[in-house]
Length: 297
Image (cartoon, rainbow, N blue to C red; front, side):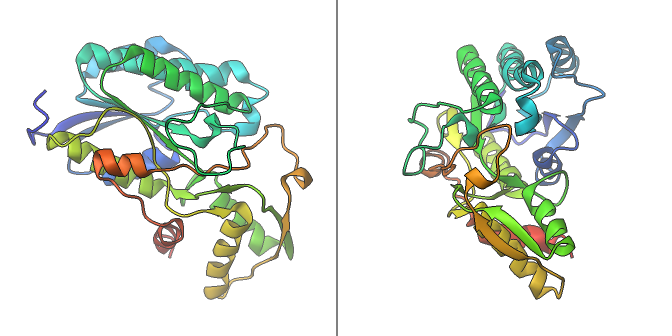
């Protein structure tokens, strides 16, 4: 395909109601025809359904926005997590390579153990702590093994105004309770799904205009950093500004909030390579959160 052509694209997107997929459906308007495949059309646990859908439609670009993202649940259903997060991405990559088209796939900060003192770069060696991170890393390796034109975009702490996420959970709990305990020793960058979708649109535009950077793995999160406690404080400030009730927040260590899956203490990702290679820079997490919340009013 002539990437400098501005003819309408046929874009296949896996995942229908997920946070990133929902925002992609807004950000990619005007690029061409979007084929959104939900669970009814695409069972990522069965690779043959992937091949059938791709071969039937023969898109110009595939975006895999579907994943098994229930981190704690993955610990008790590893086979499903590895099928969706590990095997399926490789199948998408195989089909994309056969058609000679790019694949965009989203991964996670959970491929790292979080023990590094500074933000992780793409050159750091992954060492996931749990099933979710391990399954996502298998998916990364599967795509890389196939080769072809692909972008693996690692992000973190994704939230939006729909689905299940920290932002919506905190908004609800803060208005229901008088006090709330929130983990304060895990550090990362809350990343709005709208930021991910907008950045994806920019990457596609660069590719179409013939200004693509190198294909491969990149980090894509909001700029800046905070803790889950800091994120909760920012959410609470907006509730108070709107005259809504807000719980008193208490910072606690991870050890005081045990979960089935172990979380990285440091989820910070260095996104400078994406800026250098693709000229895509990321907004500050707090400003992006305010932009997200503006859509709630």
